[in-house]
Image 1 (cartoon, rainbow, N blue to C red):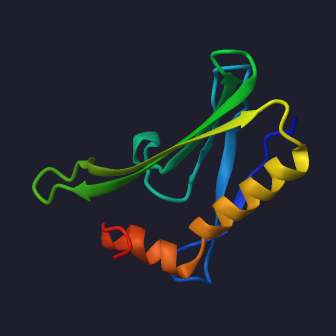
Image 2 (cartoon, rainbow, N blue to C red):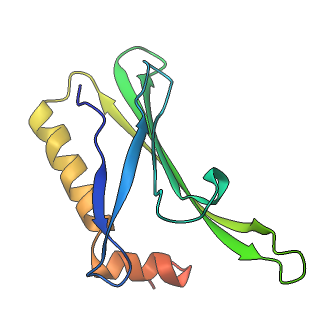
Length: 133
């Protein structure tokens, strides 16, 4: 198992890097590791968050990994000066790996699926709110 580490990535401009800080490692099956972007927002509820949890599949023959993320839109009320979350963008994905699948195939699957989602074309579909037509 890999140890919790900070995640360095590019912002939407493609040149500015941002770090998502590893705040909480998973304490075992079913509990999530948690990363947050601490440079956004002044309160914890205002910070984007990524979670990864893993558990045994129902039959015990697979591992199930669940990824969730949320990115809040924060707004400051011009009258009261109070900043609050007004909307959230959310993401959820689930990976299921049969335990007897060769690790090289799991590695290739993860690399290709996450790589495909990182392409300019796939990102444009997500940003538009519509699937490819």
